[in-house]
Length: 230
Image (cartoon, rainbow, N blue to C red):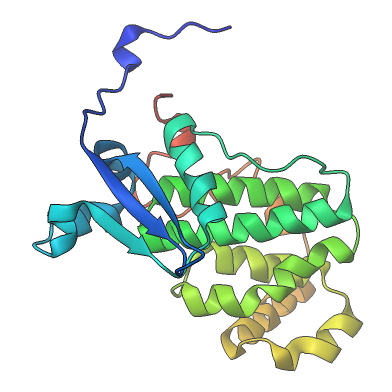
């Protein structure tokens, strides 16, 4: 078991914030150290700085997200580990894990948490390396509209989904289904197909080992992998 210097101890203080996740009556309340989540989430930080009543009560609501997704996020806040259900050799479980990762990424977008988004993205890339059947490709295609409705132009998850489609979707699948996807997604995939036809080469996703931040969203030069471990 590795030993870490005492200087890595976090002084989280005693102030906590209550976060209600989900729509009533199916919501769940979470209690999180305020310092910890404010350091990570720009949304929470801005909300607690505002003069709204939420500041006094230290209560924040996230009605559009599932308690399970926030539970994974909260575990990551305290441990820097993303906890998923086991069974990656099972197609159904891999499908479910991919769905959870996409939801987690979108939660990270809403919270303004770049480190969490980049962490989730690396798990999506790992998922991509393990899939081997069409069944396991479904969660990507099923979530395209949600992702494009919930993210901004240039978002790394959009780029990942486009690259995934260009290099994994069959010609028959694309011909039969392209009308069901958002127009901007179709345009990006068409450009990707054109580039692949003209320039060939390897899938962009396969270049991540050489360019580990290819699908990251951090705006500074410090990737979460290079930051000090907690």
